[in-house]
Structures are given as C-alpha cells and as structure tokens.
Image 1 (cartoon, each protein chain N blue to C red):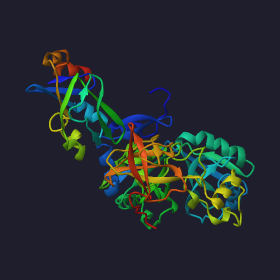
Image 2 (image 1 turned 90 degrees about the vertical axis):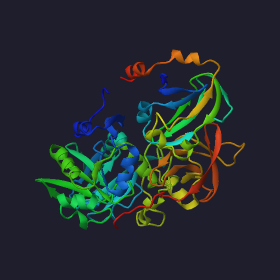
Image 3 (image 1 turned 180 degrees about the vertical axis):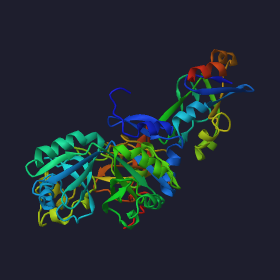
Image 4 (image 1 turned 45 degrees about the vertical axis):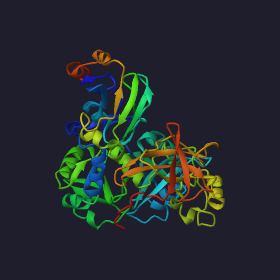
Amino acid sequence: MADLKRTVFFDLHVELGAKMVPFAGYEMPVQYPMGVMKEHLHTRSGAGLFDVSHMGQVILRPKSGRYEDAALAFEALVPVDVLGLAQGRQRYGMFTSQDGGILDDLMFSNRGDHLFVVVNAACKDQDIAHMRAHLSATCEVVAVTDRALVALQGPRAEAALEALVPGVAAMRFMDVAILPWGGVDLWISRSGYTGEDGYEISVPKAVAVDFARALMARPGVAPVGLGARDSLRLEAGMCLYGHDIDEGTSPVEGNLTWAIQKARRAGGARQGGFPGAVRILRELAEGPARRRVGLRPEGRAPMREGTLLFAAADGGDAIGHITSGGFGPSIEGPMAMGYLPASLFEGMIVYGEVRGKRLPAVIAPMPFHPTSYKR
Amino acid sequence: MKYTEEHEWLRVEGDLVVVGITEHAAEQLGDVVFVELPEVETMVAKGDDAAVIESVKAASDILAPLDGEIVEVNEKLVDNPGLVNADPMGAAWFFKMKIDDLSVLDEYMDEDAYKELIG
C-alpha cells in the first residue's frame, strides 16, 4: 500500500492481527480477529479501544493570550457559539462554505487560554489551510503532529481509564481535562463517536503504544476497528463527513440545527457572521426543502449508501437517497440515514430500490440505539 | 466436493448438486447479516446471479455455478444468516440444482487445487 501514511500504532495493529485497509490516506485497521460484529457488541458491553490518530489535532492560540479573541475569530468560520463555551468544555461544530455547505465537521474545546480543535482525517490539510488563511491575524494555528489520538468507548471505559488516570471518572460528558500519565500530559475529553460513554485521549506519540497496551491490559478492553466504528456511529445517528454531510448539504439540511446555538441565530447576541449565513439563517427560519432522516428498512435487507428512495412501491421519480446504511448489530436489523423532502415525517413509509426491487423503510427517530452518556 | 474460482463449493447428492460458499469466502465476507435466495423452479445459466449475500461490510452475489434448475433452497439462511459464518461448508448450503449431466463437475477444482488457489 504505497503512499499511505501509518499511525504510530501500525505495528501494534499488525501484532494484534488487524486487517489493514486504506482510509483517508492512512493504512488503518478495519477489524481485528474478533470481527466487526463482535467488536461492535463488545464496545456496547465492555470497552473498545480505537486508533483515531489519523484525525487532525489543531491548537488555535490567540496572540493576545485571551480565549475570547480566539473564540470570536473562530466564530467567523463556524455557525456555533464558541465564545459562550465554558472553560474545560467541548462542543460540536462545522466549517461552513460561502454557499452554506459543510466543509468539515469537528469538535472544539475551551482550554482556558486557547482552543483545541479535532477535525476529520480526510479534510485536515484543507482545514488547517482554511484556519491559517482566516485566523492568522489573531491566532497562531498549530497543527499538533507529535501526538496520537485514541478513543476508549463503552460501559467499562470509565473504570479502565480511571485505573490508569485517576480523575477521569469525575468528568462529565463533553468535559475536557489535561491529566498526567507516566510523566506525560494526556489531553482527555469525555466524548466519542459510538453513542457510548467514553473518552478520546490525545497522547504523545513517544508513549502512545505503551499507553494503548496499558489500556488493553485492563479488564474488558479490546481493540476495535473502523468497521465497527462505522456501525456504532450509525446506530448512534451520527454523521460521517463526506457521506451524510458534505459541501452540498447545509447544517440545517443535515439536521444539525441543534449545533447552532441561539447566540448565532437571528436575534441572537452574535447572529450570523459565519460563511453561508444568509442561506443557513433562511433555512432555520423557513425550514429546508430536504432533511437528513433516519430509516429502518422493514425486512432484513440492508439499504446501502446510494440507494434511491421513492414515495411509492411503483412508479414516480426518486425523492431522495441513502447516504449511510448497513446492519446494526445492537438493534439486530438494518438501518440507514438519508435525505428526503422535509415535508415527510417520522412514521411514514418510503421505498428503497435494492437490486431492482422497491422495499419499504419507515422514517425513524435517531439514535437507533439509545446513547448512554454520563451527563 | 468440487470448488469454483468464485469460492463456491459443489457437492453431489443423488442426482442433485448442492451449492454453498467456502470457509475462505465466508471468512473474507465477515459477519453475514442477510441472505436472499433464488426462487425454486428457476432455470439459471452458469454465471447468472442466483443469490445475494450481505455482510456487515458489503453485498456480494452468489453466481449459479452451472446451467440448470434450482430445485431447493435453504430457508434457514434467511432467518439465520449467521449460519454462513458458523458452518459454511455444511448447514449453510444455499441451494440445490438439477443439471443435465453431472460429468461437467469434472472441470472444477478438487480440494487440493482450491487450497492452492487461496494460498
């Protein structure tokens, strides 16, 4: 696999028997010998350890030394309340384009005198260039390249990490903290991409493999690959950038209005002022023409990405399409998300065309599997 | 037992040929979550799509390995697709075919040749 980058855990993945595949320019583990289904279920009952080091870690350090200056500068790129985020807290957001599409989605946290941002692997180079182009007057934009990133997710994550890093059990969902382990600082958030309670931990590369081994030595912790990461996030109703949301979808169409706080909406303290504000504020007021929804196919056949959706079992043009779909091991059935006219609502039946046959699917609330965050 | 390059196995049972996928194929597919079987009494030509198998990863077609008629299908797979992973060479057969001339099976690989193919 020429030209693919490797994370610091590559040799460990191979040692653990992972099947490695290309993903976002990296050679990543799609599954370990346990297999996608069991890894998924293990994360819901024990704790799954994920290598997410391919993701981008970025520090936005205000030249003034004041968080407020970094926050206000960052607000020019995201339709999210950054200024109002309390110290030690994390929030979800997205970079929007001038026409209101989504350039990438991200997590950011207030670390007192600076912002810490985590972006998607496939977008990180353009995201960093985007931030440098727009924020350099007020902030130093630092790509963090000497750290790995792991996620520890599931009901046994808290006990496993607390045994190594006392203090993490006291964190609440979306808290962030810097805590010591083995002489280094870990950057920890209580969040993730599975719907389970758990943590994401940024660890210096030099000790990252030791840290992963220490976690795997704790009861209930097993390595989990990208295959299960995808089915876990889909059961949790979370978007995968480049599939469920992209430059062609606005945050309102993407059903992410919950991420646009009052302060940035019409009538808010800092309304608008982000790329694409005209379209996004209009869609917030008037409603979008189409919206991302959850779908539960009625039979057992999964409806995959790209499946066309129809209003009726026969005839008519497609009214939408599926952007992510597969089988949910925890819900023991197929699940999907996709775009449909906003006039349709939960409980209605649409038809997905699978191998030439139109099969019924009901518009269903998400998450498909209940989340278990420690709020 | 005979094997195809599409990783199917063929077993003669009286005047019928039983068709399934190999252990190697089941392993490569990963956890099977959905199986769609052909209708009984369908005439198929070698290479036609005969059945569909979906794993957590992707959908794959099971091709008809021979010209003939589908005379029986394994309905157990519809209710329990995981059987394909649990017992691919036995209980998880897909369908039984009636063919004109069983001697065409001679063209297919035996176990040693198949093992060589999958390395």
